[in-house]
Length: 151
Image: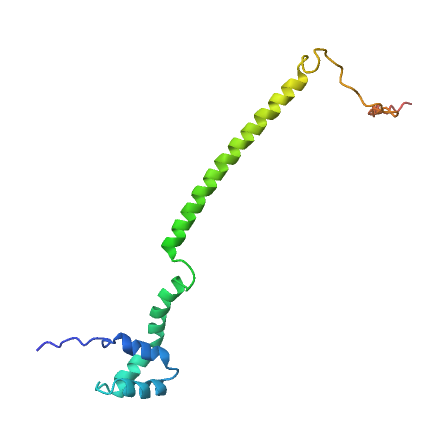
């Protein structure tokens, strides 16, 4: 006769998992388990196995809580917000580049007008040079000559 494989773990429902997570020690869990589930005929070994899996249940319950904290949007909302933000930044960048091109063309236009001989009253004027009482002195680099040693 073939032996039927036994489950490694018994089926534990959500109410039992919630009760495990609410208790601080195994003694408290055992007492509360007997109060909450008086009709279940589980022995102390089955209840202690549930308690031993407490860390596993905590990890499973915390995973959804860590990904979505209250007050923060979920991952899909964040993706949508970032996509919208990037689109707005691209549009702003295009507008700023266009404004820079317009400013450059205006600046070039005014520079060309100032350089042209017909800029002011039809006469070409010499640019005024500021009168400096002390002219700028040019610094000459001294030429070094070879030292000749003779006899």
